Image 1: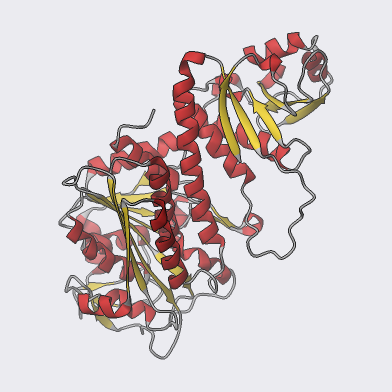
Image 2 (image 1 turned 45 degrees about the vertical axis):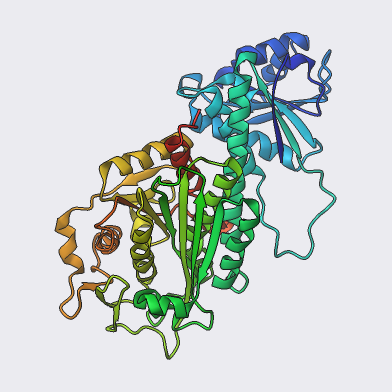
Length: 499
């Protein structure tokens, strides 16, 4: 969808639809009150009919308003004014766009940014408007043979600005929102593709196709023979059960100073996870195509970085494979040797994400990183603990953890920090190897991070477990594109470009 930031008088806007907010108890914000006066009190008269009280999520359409050049006015409930914050604002924008996307209006003008919820700025409100609108309008239909072309989808949204002196900040917010939203959509598309299409080779090709977008981007794909020479026995042990060869995607973006240390993102790219010999239950196994959402999010962040032309050095690593049962697959009790030289006893072949990540984390050392962040749909325990609302966060550096937590709050893509105390480390000790790949029934998210922490002692590191936040199950089954907003915001803040 196309977005434009604009200043002007709302009542003068010639548009198919003008979007206004209404607070609970039919209270009209200032901009809505002005529009009501301009159309001879039609809005208040409509609200008095009782069809809408202003509760969050309500909507009501007025056709052919008097004395105005717009064809429709869409009223959207904003809830209680005292509780109106950025989270509520995003829901209001989403409701407005969802209402219009399958209607007759192909373009609309929104006055919702006039509301300026708590803790918002011109930059953040315009950025979040774009993100919420794109979230509401997204659909995945790449694998459908019959797409309804009779619909007239919403194609353009103009965002009205109250203070013209803030136009530069508003335009910046729109531009940043579009870059992040495009990155989120890329991550969603990759996550939603089935495993027979989105294979490790397909992911690698997607990374290579991004090279054309910037001369500052270098892409290298390490094949299994190269990984064998590097000693990546842990990563390669996972791919032995698959006919699809493993890949290690290496993307280097050099937008910062030549000697500036890069931020390194490592995304788990299991394009399908059947569990290996420790086979998963069949019910819901089709959702294991989403086990590469960490890798998809890394590609999404790189896409946003390229659109924004960020003055930063960024390295993205995606170890990618399938995890399937086969005569050559890992067996419970096997011992493999990682790139670091540490030996790993495989107690459960379904705990394979950490096996591919640990070699990629060791490989990250060669870039002399400022920080390393891995992103993975790693543990069901994280879903039990935090549900779908927050990503799990564990880190060996409190400053890095705080950066991620703050970026999550600012974008609504939140994380929650769990402890990484030494007390948990003994749970993954092995009697026959240096380390076991699972730690038993309890604290599964933490012991998985403990495993990864043993390969990250030489740099600042954080781990995001996105098993609950990366996709939605049930009737709304779809990838979410998280944590692309969180990670892009972190990079923007490091570049001092947020706001």
